[in-house]
Image (cartoon, rainbow, N blue to C red; front, top):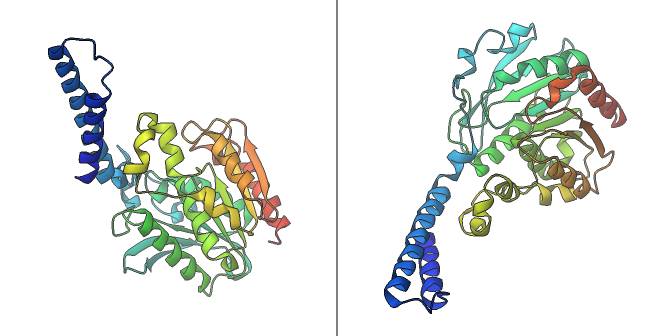
Length: 320
């Protein structure tokens, strides 16, 4: 209750000490003070609610009308086999023993092909991304490792920033040890929230990542609060526990990075992607690709052929 008390006491103190209505009769000043205090109390309860529930407000394993488990999706969204992609169901254990469900989608000669480790967007299960994964698989001749974050799909646990970072750590280490995969040809593709996950894990293990693709991601959660809930911006220092400070993590990454930005992203301002690009000064083969009609969730599928060609050009540039 410390945050609640602090905010309430501050508002009450301002109302009592710096009352701009000193010339108004006492009874009316008391009413104004009461009104300010009531508003302060309501704001405090809202702040406390956001402080305690911010993980459930940020992470969305389920989308209304869409199953949590990909096995319950409509046909062609249930597993890679429905797209005639050879795959294995995989369980990866994070450091805290949380079991994560993933799909390893393979090329016929998987050990010779590059492998894309895909960290998905925030909302929904990973089966919803299969159309895009199919385009990458067939056009780029890559293996793909997809994973459900903790609390998503068939994975155990509850999503938190610390937890998702553990998930990424476990996944990268797991993929790096697979006999079917060349550990020197691993590329991370992170989209939206997955971009923050990808930036974090690349900054931690640059020697394990040949290249990083960041698509429609954000600079930090604090910056997104300014966009989505500007009325809380003044209090975010008190209530915000989630960081995902990509703008800081990306500054020291030397790994090649491809930035893919949808110019019509309606959720994350494209200016945040540009700030990430500008901050990545130490990245070799840093590349910018903008999709003029790309929205937050459909940038990759507006023109799949061009999208894959741009990724392929960049991959060739970095030696894949």
